[in-house]
Image (cartoon, rainbow, N blue to C red; front, side, top):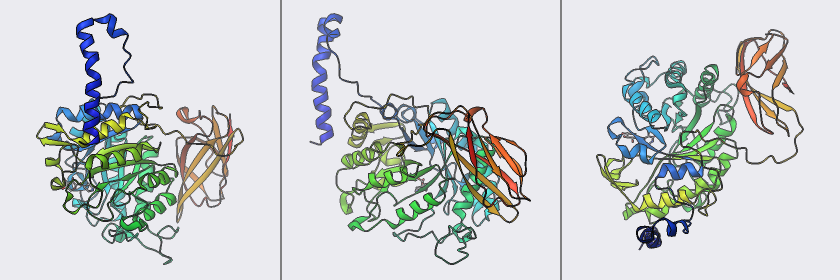
Length: 493
Ligand code: XIL
């Protein structure tokens, strides 16, 4: 008997006397029975209690009632890909199916993950486009749905297969140029489609005051190691990208299609890998989870239900792992149906829960602490999970500090400024910079500038002035000329 079935039977046995008493003895007797903290009975409710979302990939034809009952987040499986919605000039077309999914999610208090903007596959009319056209598409897609999309996969599957640790060689990565030939694309003179796409997406988000979070998503990046204990070079390459472009990237998706491929195993260091990304300050999501149950050539370990438990537990154990999404409802409807990798059998709106489903539900019900008594207060599934800075390691002075990161080109720049409160909360802030001669501010977001050249100050706007101790917020400004070398100073009020 599997552990899960065993547990369920035990629970049924325990529940029985209470039911009998209820029938036989009425309210007086039942009052004396204090049930243990009630377990939630749907994935979304159990996940919400633990402070994360639990989502599913779907298409308009798969929106049966189970979707809204069990899941609190929706990823369009195909309907927001460029192959469906992009024109060759970066415009939008055929957005009807995507709209159906977004509307369904909104009606049912589900978050939406937009999937996906820049990808070598399913690129449709965008295939072969230059960065300017990609940027146009990014702008159109982000503004089309605005805050109705909580997370967007801005760049999908940018890294090469077979644990190479390099970028893909297919378009759009053919746009990349390692100008100084030092083997990376992180230098100011390099051209990097990942950086340029995220810079553009961040600009659009900030210029439109959106709360949409910008994610990078990939597969075979789940563990610190791959089969045989070899370092996971693909995961390390992703880590370098997120570290270098942290100011533009808000979240990292591990696709988590676990199968027979030696780089797709569920390794014991999955949690440690989630943790190291979380330590960069980004949210981590398991975005496309399915776990091969075809045991004929299985190197991910036997027992699908236990494998699901491991993955869910690894996420629960990292506070900034804020969501898990399965890539479909039922095995028969999965993109990899032969692997029987999902949580339900059946199909066409008529679904049966598998042992893997019960394992996931049970693990979610144990909460972040793993004890069954969730330490996080219940949150409603409609709320975008908020991320609390884990610790403030050393004493920081009261007031505030500011740091700037610049994205410069010949004749212009975008500055992203991060404001951090000190050891006490603040009610407002302003940041001063001395711009070099010739530099002029042309545009600012999330702040009110005074002046455009020389000594310029940026004051908080209504929504971002109050910061708790050690909390951060970001604002930005764009300008002509060069801002190289500016040092921001922060004054709290
Ligand atoms: C898959 C869909 O599930 C299939 O229906 C489609 O034919 C091909 O794409 N990584 C991704 C997803 O980012 O978009 C892919 O989805 C699965 C792998």
